[in-house]
Every structure is written in C-alpha cells, then in structure tokens.
Image 1 (cartoon, rainbow, N blue to C red):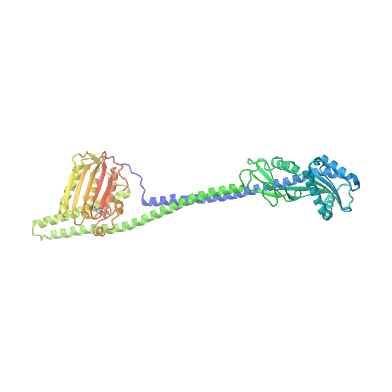
Image 2: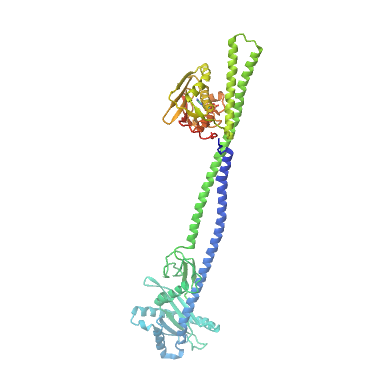
Amino acid sequence: MSKKWRLTDRTRTLLTLELAIALPAAALMGFSIWNLKHIQRDKAIEAAIQRDFSYVLKIAEKESWERANDLVTPVRKGFPDLDDGPKTKAILEHILLQHPEYSYAALYDKKTNLLISRTQPSHDQDAAYCAYAQEDINMLLSWLPLESPSMVKHLRRMEEKGEQPVAFYGGWMPRENQTTYWHIAYFIPPGVPKDRVAVGVVAFDEDYMRKNFLPAVMKDVLTGKSSVLKADANPPIMMIHPLRDSNPWLASAKWDGGKPEAERIFADVFPSMVLAIKYQGTTVADIGARFLHYNYTILAALSVLMIGGVWLTYRNVYREMTLARLKSDFVANVSHELRTPLALIRLYAETLELGRLTSKEKYQEYFRIIREESERLTSLINNILDFSRIEAGRKEYEFQETDLGELVHSTLESYRFQIQQNGFAFEENISPDIPPVKVDREAIARSLLNLVNNALKYSKDRKFIGVSLYRSNSSINLEVRDSGIGIPANEQEKIFDKFYRCGDPLVHNVKGSGLGLSLVRHIARAHGGDVLVESEPEKGSKFTIALPFATAPQTGSATA
Ligand code: ADP
C-alpha cells in the first residue's frame, strides 16, 4: 500500500515558524529595503523637480526683465530733453500715441521741482482712466522730490557699468474692490547732464501687463525652447500672486488651483509680485502622500501576517507543551498498567507452581485470571504498538470482505464472560441485513473492544452495556452504549486526541493510557468513516463507529 506523506508535530511547528514568522519577517525586511531605496529615489526626484522649477522661474524673471527693458529703451531714447521746454508735453504725447502699452509718461526736474506729464492720449475720452492715471501722477509727484536723487544715483551707477540706465518699480493698490498692480519704468533721459537730477517715467498700462506682457512671458517659459520641462508628460502650469496674498492674480492656461511647488519674487522687474509654478493635477506632496498611504497599507498587511504568525506559533508551542505533559502522564500510566497484570500473573503462576491448591475450581479460577490478565496485557501492548505504528506513519490495514455481524458477535463472545462477571447487564443487537463490507477485521475488533472496555471502566453503579450493529441510510453503524459516568460536553471532542484523559477524578482512579479512542478514530477514518460520541454526565455515553457501505479504504496509513 502506498505511503501517504504526513505532517508530524515537529514539521508543523517548523512550517509554522517558516511560513508565519520567517516569511513575513523576510518580506518586511525586503519591503523596508525597497522602501528606503524608493524614498531615496523620491527625494532625488523631488529635489530635481524643485531645481528645475527654480530654474524655470529664474528664466521667467530674466525674460520679463529683458522684455520690459526692450520696451522701454526706444522710449527712453526718444524722450524729451530738459531744454525742450514747452515742446515737452507734445513729445510725451507723441511717444504715448506710438506706445499704447503705457498709461502715462512724465519728466521730472529736481532743480525746478517740475513734473511735466501726459496721460495716454488714446484714452482721453475715458474719464475714469484719465482720473486713475492722474491719481498715479500725483502720487509720483509726492515722492519724487525726496526719492529722485537716490534713483538717479542708482541709474548713473548702472550707466557706468555699461548697462542701460533703466529701472523698474511697482506695487499693489486696492482699486474698486480689486487689487491692481501699478508699474513704472524710470530712467535718465539721454540729454541730461551728469550733474542734473532729472528722471523720465513711463507707467505700464495694467491691462496690457495683465493681458499681453505677463501671459506672453509665461507662455514662452512654459513652452519655449528655454524650458527644461518641455519633455515632461505632465505639463507644468504657472500663476502670479501678490506677495501678501496667495490667491492667483493671473494664471496660465489650465491652472487648477492647489499649492505651487516653487515660487519666486520678481524682485528686479515687478516688486512684490510672486511667480509660482506646479504640475497640473497633482503635486509632489500628493504623490508622496499616496506613496505613504500605500506603504502603510503594505506594512499593516505584513503586521497582520506577523501577528498571525506569532499567534500560530504560540498555539503550536502550547500544543507541543500539552503533548509533552500528556506523554509523561502516559509513560507513568502505561508502566503502571503493564506492571499490574504482570504482578498478578506472576503471583498466580507461583501459587500454581507450589501445587498447594486443593480444589479443581481454584485451579480453574487461577488459570482464568492468568488468561484474562495476559489478554489485558496483550490488548494494551497491541494498542501501544498500533499507536507507535500510526505515529511513525507505518500503520497498514488489510481490508478484506467481511461479514460484520459475525465479526462483532464473535468478538463480543470472547468478552461476554468478563462483562457479566463484572455485574453488567449486556445487550447485543445485530441486525440481519448487514451487507458484506471490506474492513480490516483485527482493527475493527480492536475498536469494538476498546469501546466495550471503556464502557466497563467508566461505569459506577448503573452497570449496563449495549452493543448494536445496524444499517442506516448511508452507513453501517456499530454502537456501544453504557449508563456510566458520561463525558462533559467541552471534553467530548478532546477525548479522541492521543493521551487525553478526562478531568473527572474517577477517570484517574481507573487505569488507562489515553490511547484507545485515538486509535478507534484512526481506524474508523482509515475505513472512510468516523466515530461519534453522544454523552451526558451521570447519564451515560453512546459511541458510534459509522462505516460507509462500500467501505473504500482511504489508505493504509491515514493519520489519527
Ligand atoms: P483511556 O480509557 O485509556 O484513558 P481512551 O482514549 O479510551 O483512554 O479514553 C479517553 C478518555 O475518554 C478516558 O480517559 C475517559 O475519560 C473518557 N471516556 C472514554 N470512554 C468513556 C465512557 N464510555 N464513559 C465515560 N468516559 C469515557
């Protein structure tokens, strides 16, 4: 018969340790290493993104400065001279007509403290426009007398360095419930002698700045050749906001809100204006948060696995410990059980040897005792041998077609005398319609004897044993009933475990090894059936071995 691979307690413990602890631990370690690498990589990506974005913003600032400078330079070159006198205003008007991007132009002479100005002539009909422009000019006149010397000094220094003497200034101003940006370029008109403090001013039209100038800069930076982000699949987007207000004042196409990745203050061209940039849709922080969430999930799953592993190991260790305790109980029980019949046999044999017995009946009785005790010994040794074979996976069954009724009857017959001698009422019911089945005769007989023997052992005053063999719908049932001490419900499953003996004190006064029922179960299962118990403490028990009709043996070495 083929041998079946079986799990011993040791392999089970090792497997549990490996599967439930070592594997998750290894997975956790692997995951942590992978994670660290990922974090490193993510940090590098984040740093690269930050670096790229900062670079883009720097380019944007430079480009807007160049554009503004390019706009102002020709205007500066055609600006009126201090000597132009009454013609000054006409020249300013001429310039403004040619350059609708300015809202006004002005020439200030510190010496005379005179500010000659002209608002954009193309807007002369727009009273509100003219009023705002005039308001700005008045503001200019309020601070130019004080500021113009340092402005000129700064411009002269630029000139000395070979740069265009043009500078910019601007700021935010609330106007009709909205924030507007005023922005001027100031310079030294070409003909002004070095020792004179005079400043030319042109103010950029806000509409032009907002609708043309700044959008063009943003578009250029985001899509132009200079952009380092050009190849990226997720397009970057930009917006401009006041220094003290993070809400967008102007945004590039597709701006979708959210926190920008990088910002830069336009210090030189547009004071107090902040340029911000980010990726469309998601931010790096969002990606990080998602990554973190994902990591937490994996960690939680691995932790659950580990906890499961610890629990399983605990259970296994606990089981091993219980088994070790049961085994030591078993050794004590078995030695005791072996010793008692041997001592009796020896005692009676010695008495017989002395030949002092007078009556024939006495001889008979002594022979009977010796036979019974040696039978008890044989059955105990058989149980132990069977058990050790099962444990080693070597137990084999020999199935042969059997008349179960005859087998049960003859097995009980050899026991009947002992049963009755112990004062038990005995009832045997063998149904005549039992079909022949393939069983291992010896194993079935041993199971029956174990059950009957238990009924004998675990009964106190009500001495009754009933054995029935009958056919049910799906099986042939071999039933052993008693009116003994019964088994508490919580122990009814455990009694089939090897070495298990109930906690009842009476049980411990009775000899036993805790092997009988585990063997019965092993045998029943090897026949494709099972053994069931119904019992109530103080009322009695009923054990039923249920065997399927066409007993198809599972295997010769099924596990108990
Ligand atoms: P043993 O009888 O050698 O202790 P078994 O495996 O045959 O071992 O039985 C296990 C335990 O089940 C017994 O110790 C006893 O506590 C309980 N038991 C078995 N049969 C009966 C029964 N008929 N009535 C009450 N308790 C029983």
